[in-house]
Structure formats: C-alpha cells, structure tokens
Length: 544
Ligand code: DON
Image (tube, rainbow, N blue to C red; front, side, top):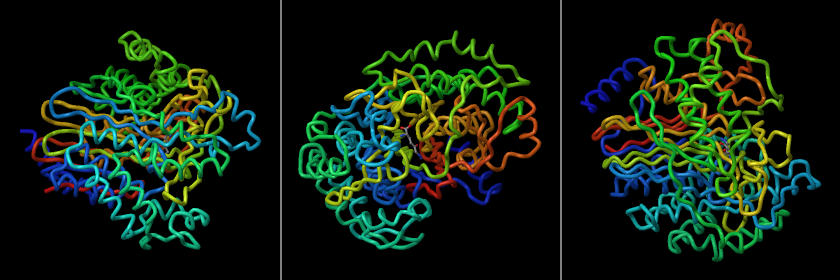
C-alpha cells in the first residue's frame, strides 16, 4: 500500500516538476553533494547498513566540501533501527581543559571565537564516527573510509558549493589543494594528505586521531595558531549516547536530537504548537500559516536562548518545554492577527557566508534510518588547516556564549547555561530527525546554523500537512524566526501579497535567499524517495 502511495507520489512529482526526487528500491542516501551521496550508496550496494553509509558519506563530505564539515569538526547522529530503540549518538566537540569563561572577553582579537586557534574546540568527528561505526556498523571500518579516501587520493570535481565558498580564499586553496588560486566549479582537486589520514583512521579504528600520529599533528597545528587544545584533551574526549527526544505530530511518531542540541526540543515544541491548527486549510505559505509558524518559532527559540546548554553541566528542562501545559500556553499567547514588539535586539543575522555544516539522511533496505549532521561551524571553521593530516579545524567555541550579551556568528544570544566551561559541549541547533507512520519513514535534517531547526520544520510540515514529495518539500521557499534578532527572515519566492499581509501583522521582514540546506528521504520498504536541497546544489543517490 505504502509502496503504491510512494509510486503515485513519484509519478505526480515527475509530471509536475522539472526536478523529481531520486528513487531508490534498496536504500537511499541524501547528502548535500552528489559525490558524497554516491559514496554512501556504494557502501549500501556493497552490503553495508545505514550506519556504514552515513559514516562513509560524512567522511566523503569532509573531503569534497571541506568548508562544511570534516574530521576537524563534530556532530550528531540519530539512528532508528527498523525495530527497536532509537540511539542519539553525540560526537560533538568539547571545550579544551584550558578554556575559561572569560577567554574570549580577554582575547586581544575581537574575532577570536571564530578565527584562529583559540576558536578550535576538541576535534571529535574522527573518533566519533569510528565509535558509531563500531557500535552499529556492519562493514569493516577500513572499507567504510575507502570511498572518501579514494576521492581524496584520486581527486574529485570541485562542486557548486565548494567553488562558491572558496572563491575568495587563496590561502585555503593553497593549504587544502596546493593551488595558487581557488579552484573553479568542475576543476579536479586532490587531497593526498587527507587520503592517508582517512586510511590510518580506518586501520586504527579512529585511535590515530585521538592518541596517535594524527593527534600529535592536529595539536601542533592548533597550538601554532594560538589555540589551547592538548593531546590530553584529545585522549580524554568521549562520545555520548543520549535518550532521543520523542514527539508525535498528526499521527506520526518522531525521534529527534536532545541537548546539547537545542534542535530537537525547539522543533518538537513548534510542531506540538502547530498541531493545534489546521495548516492545510490555511494553505501552503499563506500569510496565516506563516504567521503561526513564525510565532511558534519565536517562543521556542526564546526558550533556547534562556534555558539551554550542555546537559552534562546544566539541567535543561526538556520535559517541561514539551509538556502539554507549555504547548497550550504558547498557543494561548499566539494572536492570529499580529506579532508583538521585540523583547530584545541583536545584530542582524549575517547569512550567506556561513556554511560549515552538512546533513546526511540515509534509509537502508532493511528500514534502518540514520540522520547525521556534522559541522566545523562556519565556513572552513577556524580556517586553521593542519598540513600533516590535511584536516580543517572547527571554530565550534563560537557556539558557546563567548561574550555575554553579544550575539554569536549566527546572531544567536544565550544564557549562563551555555557559558564556556572546560570540557563542556557548546549548544547546537543540529536536528537530525526521523518520523514514522506505519511502514513509512521520513529521515530529515539540515545545515544552516539556527536555520537548521526552522528549515527542518518546514520540510516536515510540507510533507505531512501539505502532501508534498520530499523534493518539493525541501525546495519550497521557507521562513525563519529565532526570537532575537526580532526579524522574520523570508526566503526569496514568497509572493508579495503574502509579505504585505505579514507586515500588516507587525513582522519586520528580512527577505533574502536562504543558505540552509535540507536533505530528506520519504521511504517505505521497496521504495525510497530522496531529495537534496537545491540551495546547496546537492543530489541524492538511490540504490536500485
Ligand atoms: O551546531 C550548530 O548549531 C552550528 N555549529 C551549526 C553551523 C551551521 O549549520 C553552519 N551552516 N551551514
């Protein structure tokens, strides 16, 4: 029945749109770059499961899109086996032991939390992906790293997003590819040092990057750039397995990522609020529907700023924030015809140049779903590149409240709950999410800083409330409100009359092309539809 439904959806999509979702029969990988999706699909075709494919895809993404993720960063993976319990696997970076609450207030450089060695939190992607693979993967790790190592060794075509993000970065072009000037789209580039690093990781089960040669090189590069990460920090880092946030939405059962991501709680609260309204009757991207979504976002993002941080340090009131009482209180505070004056002002959200994350959705033939989001934070992280391992180091320290009262690179404000503290994990917005209804599964998540949550939300609502196929759902224009700054950010393509109706309700609009990128799979046994966000030029890969 579901297969028939999905086949009909595909047919409608084929007839209706120039760009239908990709169809798989034996599994699907949707990453935000075509060569990465292909790397994951290759692992599925070789008998790997969704975890093998997600890990291999993430490693490949770190090769072909070094602005957006890689072994110098960290992330989250949400695994939902076909039957059984979900696993929220946290491989987020932590602040080094020498970090202090005031380090960025005292730093000579104003941009010390985003640029250079001090911005670097303990790199965690390598040991994290290796540990996730050890826990649930099926193929040997040496096989899982191979598609990525091959791309790095033999070279790959510079993609749309890499060409765009490296266009003005001469020093990075030299450090990453040994080129005197940035490559253009289509130019072949190689990363032989990274190929060696990946194969060492495969052989050592990740230990090379935590206690071995790779770790020594990484620490030297970070310290040379003024950072304080030590070998002891790398050796002490451990992943965490956390209870997934569970929610329901219009008959679908969802699981999403808990703190230290704010994403799952914010997403689940907004969906809880929206369930009280008939969005489909209001119409897709109508002013009435967008207003309700914006108001729900403002409440949930305000809770994020006030209350959320590393759950190992502060008690994040997840249950209270998702309780029926809280959801009812938010609904009661929403007035259809108007929005309210700003409580607080912040710097405008500076979008366009930040693109340090990638989200990967995988669904295998056995129904195991993995949403994996991995990040170096802003584009090329701290811009520190270790010449020995070829790894780009993150600037995840900026996800803490680096300077109290000041917004971070994404315009986000926060509280004491997210202060810099040795060993703490900085608050994140990454929201890998899986929804199930009967034998139908949605796997979804995004990159885009705080836009991750609102963009994931839009894609879910577009499928569940508006009946869209996943390609239409991730491509449609969307909105974002993060409470502070008090502007409703509107994607290009929302009609003028809708903008006018939103302004009438009191929203201060900021219209701009969105940079967030959603990857989504809508699948059932025997048929999976996959979609990558056109905003980042990605393509999914199905296994036939
Ligand atoms: O963890 C976070 O929320 C941020 N470090 C994510 C940054 C991001 O998505 C950048 N963009 N594409």
